[in-house]
Image (cartoon, rainbow, N blue to C red; front, side):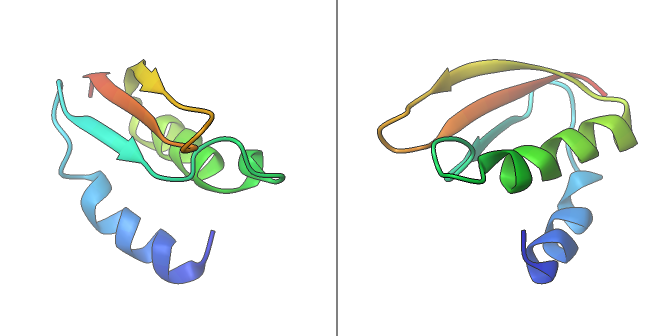
Length: 71
């Protein structure tokens, strides 16, 4: 993930509340998906102590939606 994406994400990560839904546009399906949005989100989950659930995903579009269940 590019530095600018991480900087932007660090700003809005503190804004989430329980029930917030996040849609990632390239979370899965590319060759290095574990090193991109997936990794950044998992790092944010650990840093912020969130719990979450997957709402839906599409291997065709590579999109994933998650809901924050605990902040």
